[in-house]
Image (cartoon, rainbow, N blue to C red; front, side, top):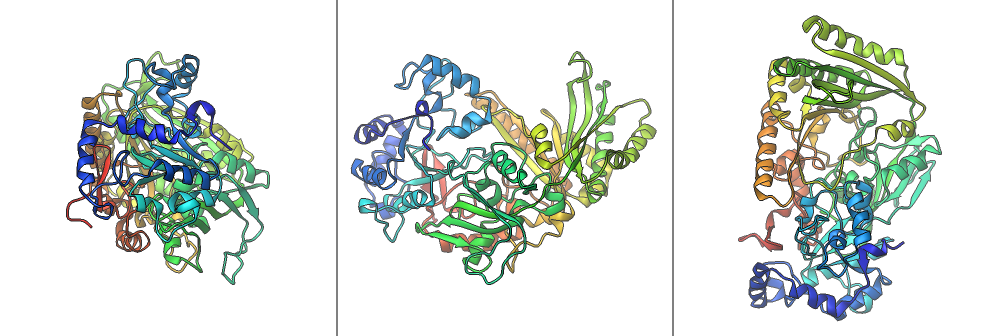
Length: 617
């Protein structure tokens, strides 16, 4: 299946290469002189259009032939709104502007990503904004099978694979995009070749599963899905069989980056992380080989690819995961709010008390999402006034409204006794016959098309319960600005998980103690360097409060601050040393590079080029 015509134009090999070269920034042009003085093997930077090691038009033509015409020269989706661009189209611009805030719009485009800052704001659909393709890949392979991914990584004369990487041969930066639902910006890069795995969507179910070259059959239902399969489609397909799988909270998230980063969700407190459910993976290595990784073969890759991060050790093309009978979901919305927001101390003391109860509530089967705010529009009067406090939305499995209410009664009683007549209390239960029915009303509805920076921290029982006063003050600092969260997405299932393989998986060990995944987001105005710097500083300051509260924990790599200090330890803890060793062995030439990702220390982005760090070879 091909992407929408309005978002790409036909491959014009010779003219497009020249056009890109002509559009290089002065800093890139000056860098090309340095590149020309070096042989390819010693070049300090990855190739850019116009450099000696950039593929010739004939090279691109052969690659296009080998992938059956699936090589695309993408245009920025916002270009239809700029009269100086060849793609300018006023009617199409109206549609782009309308869809810009929708995740579905960006995941359907070959190169667009959910947040503007990950494309360097180079072509926003805003009147008067600058527009160029410099923030996006130069070429893209629309992969519909593993073979297309393989040929993108390993390419030779007439499409015959070589024994070394095509990307390394030509010294090109390679990126992988599935849906672009990536809060860390790893699925996009300038001056790169992108492999778009969005259409790897096959879904095949199993009553039992025997991993390749294994003698043991796993007595469990399972599903094999393409890396581009999205959660709504997967949940829907499995629901027809009264099954479900550990997955995330957004319709447009695909399995590739989600599983390789670990993956949490509403079912995690019961069954474990998504990575813990993996029985087998198919991937393309840096050598361009299509390999199977499971407990019987390629064991190091099997370990690393489950939690070690995507776009790092190889390109995931499909994954087989354990499935479960879909549960009936007993849900509730809980609101504890006050209109008295002048003094925020009671708000955070109450919030800290509620958050401190989450470990015990989680041990009784509760999972869900807690939101803490200083001030929001009052939902009870249509937003005419403001309130502050806590909102919780979650569920227990295969239970009853009475059981859910029983969980919360002690919380309400304590709040009433401690802060009499202070907080409005609302409890709204609702039953759902399946996980899909619950998800259809509770999936992530946040807006895309914004400039945003995340920060997060995992919190264990000690951090949540040992000193509620300290927790209150930490959350007060953490909640400054846009509010904060306390996601109850870990618990006994994660703590006691037994992933396949003798050494488990590479998920951050702190998850095995955590109950809460606490997150924040800072939004800022586009095309405003001052606002961006201020947002970055605020995120670092706010996350520091949680780091002080839980210094021995860490952060979830798929939802964190890209500038997290000591990120190797924060995202992977004691697993990092082994992950780094595997990376050096399976990808010694850094065909796959992203940030913050395992083994990326030898390179850095300088302007729009990826260059070696001095002293690292």
